[in-house]
Length: 329
Image (cartoon, rainbow, N blue to C red; front, side):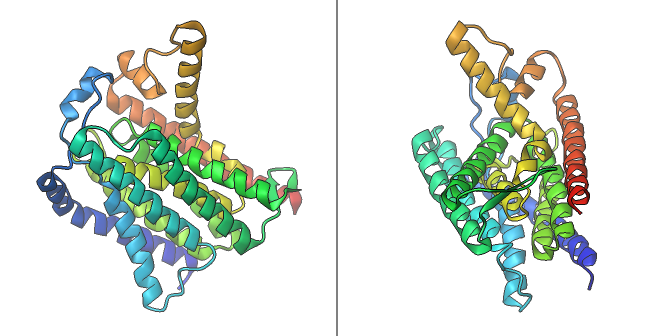
């Protein structure tokens, strides 16, 4: 069976499993009382979303991770150096996000920021160390420049930072129906292509599993959303995206492939910094998608336009990857 067939089958299987099981999963979330608490300081139009089932990201993780482990148990030799770290990150950060979602649903308050950051740092540090040791990495691959030597400890620190930053960036982006899910799909498609070209078939198939599960989730998450991803999904999938970037040796393309996440986080940081320095706000509300909401844009328009940017940036990232390979060929 060709690598392309494996990728297509993995994507379709994950999509079908999520679409089939999500209705029952949503009923379970409602029965357990896992409804979204909407912040009063956010856009008033979001108050109607109060009580919508959250923690839908757990099903994405369960399907993608479950199929991967099933293939391994059936002798498929799927869990190798290219897939162990992403799967471990998906599970461990997903656990953190699920606890945060649970506390938010029960008390209206999630895990404290410092505690969350400590957990993320521990997981990111472990994943970064495991990647460096598995691949014996002493460099960063810079597009159109080539391999730049770095000390192992500096690589681990940089890799851990990339994982934490991407995890939180996706979490910040997850503020409109379908926004984070759609942009994650395009980013993972970019890295799926890169992994396939790199000769990392298992990593490409894992990306396909995540893409398929996200497409199934998006079936229920587009406006008006029937279920939210929650921190269980956004934190875990963001961290996993960064790990995939590290293992494919194309982490420096992540800001381009995941441009929407960078812009969303940047708008938040600029807003906070400028307000502290001048007492004035640059945007009506941060992150950027809320600014456009308060400017009168419909939620669907914002989401689709951000998707378009996400598609183009992911395509451009793949083009830079291919052009860089040809440049050094």
